[in-house]
View 1: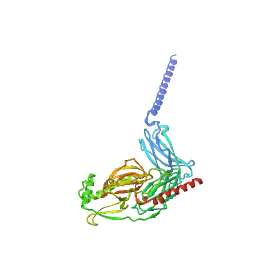
View 2: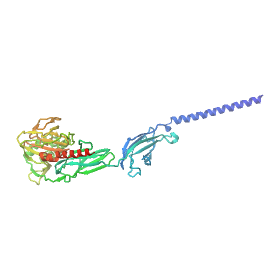
View 3: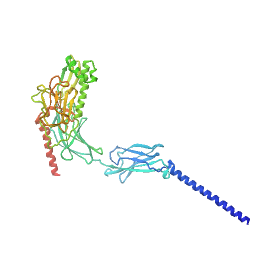
View 4: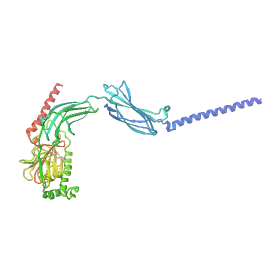
Length: 471
């Protein structure tokens, strides 16, 4: 009886030890599971990817991709897929503990993908540095649409002014179309003339200018689409040359110590100059640049007009006036003799004189965009006649309109005077096309306006109407 009792006791002891070991095992498993779920090394938050939803395909185009993760990024891969073929265009690993990164990937020029497809897919796969998912980490896949457009915009010149003179202006109307048209303008040298929509969708128009200091005049219409495809079309103006006068102007002591000295008191940086010649040079060059910059600022952009009604009359702001200075004059200022040249500048308008404080009229409807004193130009209003055409009126003794006023044809807007650097009572009359000074004489002749502006509109209307009927 005693042996049986002992045997059973020993079995009980062995069974209790197994239970403890099993319990310890379960605790260990629970601890491991708890560690996996709690430890940052096994975090389960997927990385973030920021990417635009769509792009236009273009060889060499750079695409920005932002990636971030709460604990640390691991690796990335960027693929292009045309539906039949997939290629990797970028991949890499991140340094330890790198939580965010911005990369730029370049679309290859020769990928082997099908350019006839209208769209591809850009796929960005990012993994973080987590040990979750059997050490593979958390994964995020982001896709963007690549729009494939290799067709450049279509351009067709419709009508244009028959000729343009150096320092002069003209008009062009053209067609520029593209499903994804981004920008269209007329380029002359470094200057881009903005265009406005003309009556029918896909047609554009602009006034343009041949800057009088540019020897080469090579105007062209430029159209660019969202994919970066570019088209150009030359405009076949007949080019007319024109010589500009060179003037040598003597600087008298009376002028230097009178008008110039008095004028410079308005400018602290100029009035402190003691030498009369250096003071004149600063006024004629430094202040002039500031004044012209103001004019260019207010005259740079074309405003919309109703082309069905926009017709111009010849500009002549001062009745019975004599022209006392021409446009484009190259002026050389000297002291004592021509070997002692002090400064030079260009005259960018007409000087017209009649009687003192003569009434100045606006020959065409306009909106006043500036009223105020503008340095060497004195009291000066700027009028916007629409479509990029502006007029300025300098040296006024008084201005009879306010900023923002609508001006009617024939309305008196100011009176002539001697403000600014004017020595005698006169009007400085200037015409600008999108911030470029042009020869006023063209716009002062009705026959020129008819042949170079109004008739161009008529021709364009006839051609556009015929094309619409055929379609």
